[in-house]
Image 1 (cartoon, rainbow, N blue to C red):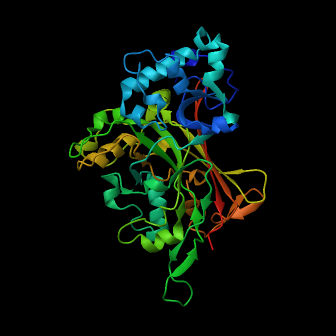
Image 2 (image 1 turned 90 degrees about the vertical axis):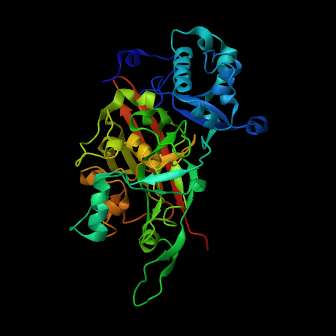
Length: 432
């Protein structure tokens, strides 16, 4: 149930019914203006989304509207990324959210009644291009859905031990490739690499991946980090997480299967990882907190949290096949099924003293649910290509060139949404 104060909030900005971005949300991103040469020459600027507009935070700061004790005079919104703001921590985040909800509210005249300032601060979404909102120093991918872990175990190891015993004691993860994280809308070139030998050959296959897959994930964005050698306590971990985005961790299953043993994923994952452009804050998600799944056995003391919570975030994956006008839904699931919470993931990441920095990303792993229609990747949906699934007027075992994948997620409040927009990418043919 949403807090009454959030239910009653209304903005003077007209927000279309069903919008992911009402005044209750205000996710943060970074945009570049389109249009004239002068507009395009402007450096990227931080913003929040409100309806069909981006509120330019540099313009808001220039107008002196961030007048609280933390943000007054701060250069954090005159940067080309959100990293400085992330590093300032929750006092800055909450002050910014309170200020923005106030100046955008229906009964506050400072923007509503000042046409010149309003036009300077509110930029139509149709006039902007979203860019990667952060400089990503480090990226870690976890494996925290028990349903995904169990299905992968069945596919690759059989029914004897589908989930390895250690999985229930620690959030399994690996260090991914930060340099190939891209913003939604970036095309994905089909990767080339080695795969298991085929036919009578003893040599591995080499060429374009034949098993290109999406992975429905969510990514947590780190705020203040920790010093090298000093872990983050489980009950302080939330203070180090700014918010969440959608993530498609594109995967080449044939390359991955050949290379994974003994050191884990490498080229089957590192070619591209797409995130949505708007970061939804944990403060905006608070009305949608829910109990996380019961953990058995009980986690070790360093992972035992006082508030063991997830968020009720309905998630969907749509695929628009090449040559077709319409996308078709292939997956419906929910973030609430996540076994290891994002706070447990962050705490485990640092328990050995590993240092995190503002703008680092750690992802949940594929978010599969318990139902057949709630599986978060084609590996599971087609049982590694043994079956086909309907996609529009076509069928798919894995992604084909020209296919576009669209991830979306949206929390449903009373009379409003808190959504993530979309996370999209189109598959292009492999390079010759």
